[in-house]
Length: 282
Image (cartoon, rainbow, N blue to C red; front, top):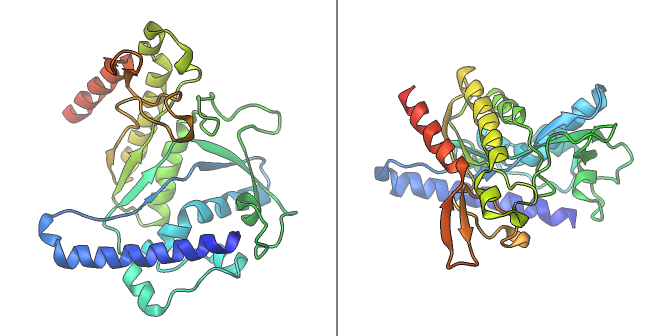
């Protein structure tokens, strides 16, 4: 139901704060750091209406602010506290422990979505409400004319929208006073790649376009002053992809599971190697 989500997240945030406290008092000599991760899409208003713009703010509050506002701002987003009567409350002691409990901001980002206001949603305390309904939002991959927000990947939830990376980083920097940010996941599985010949798989031009677009917008955000410290691509190897198993291939290295798991560099691997070398020179 809707209620348990908030209890679990509340306990997780308190546990994170306790773990961070232990780390900083016991393992500070390691010169490391501690954080937790969020995985938001970037919301694009479906129309130019004020209602859809406000729905986008709610979408970000529920997908990112729910976890990061307590850490960086000291409490849950005001929208959530206003809308969700079953949202647990932190004690003042818990707030002090949680605020500042991450040394850097870690972010997974893959795609963007159209978001619209949904005024006909059930009441937020209705435990039968779906997740989007709870936020009073509607999420869509297409605009009002049925056009995809970006080229379709193999995963139904992933459309390629490079500019969303820059906008997401700028949003994080503005909302949380420009923390050090590490993008810990970003990548793409190409449509029907599991059905291609080896030659077609290795010539993954669309993956190169994806990386070039997303990394270009990441660098644009960095040039605009966002404190981006690192980027990790998902993934080096074709891997077991959740419920899709070995069909959806995110890797820059092809794994031939029909021939003793032999590995072949896709063209994107060579591109990525050269990109990293060029960025180091700059």
